Image (cartoon, rainbow, N blue to C red; front, side, top):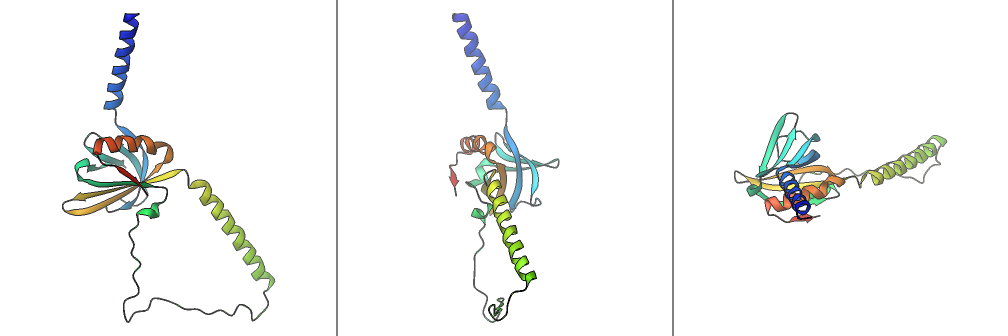
Length: 179
């Protein structure tokens, strides 16, 4: 009995050492940020020993953990866009005002058919968007490189996100925020 217990214990320790040494990785797409990579580039996101690594098209981009200042994830990519909505500068108007008199004439058969087709297309678009919204999550990495703030947003399958987040949080020492 002692021999079986010691073999079982050795097997568990060996498995843990092998699992800890193997890098955690998943398929991902770079979808936004300040890295010099084309948007929607597919590759592999790897949580290495010293850095978060994005492998793509035979290239490698590393973000060292000591440079990472913030980690966030969200269901929506737009949660990370920092676009400020400033009013038009003085003297310049980029707005267009169009007035329609919708009740002055009767609708033709063509216009009615076009309205119905538009409504059907809108319903289909909303249905497709709702069915695909749960498949992916977005991981946003904010880091400081050479005194400048950098960002990288990766699209990851929801199934892979949990293992990436746990390992990334423990290796980087940074809490991951949900947006």
